Amino acid sequence: MKATKILLSIAFLAFATMSYSSNDPEPQGAVKISLKKAMEDRGLVKAIYQQIDPRTFLQNKHDGPYIANVYFRHVYYAIFAKYEEWVKFFLMDPNDEMPDVLQAK
Image 1 (cartoon, helix red, strand yellow):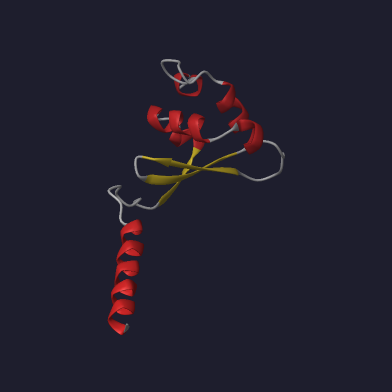
Image 2 (cartoon, one colour):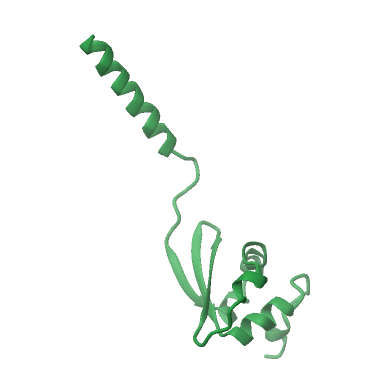
């Protein structure tokens, strides 16, 4: 009876540890960048549009920066900008050749 309990305990632990294993690489960490810097990478811009809903993200206007947490290429990004910058960002067309903000340089 003791041997059965020990074997069941070992089997349970084995199944529990298998659930934590994954083929996905671990995220490299969080990177804090400005929205202007994030707009230089088209892939990151697309990730923002896919992961952030502007209706809920910009729902309550307040002072200070708005921070969007985005996961892109196994890295978590904390992208910060003012309310007005985020509004302009969400109003631009993500399918343009280049965002308007970058064309003005």
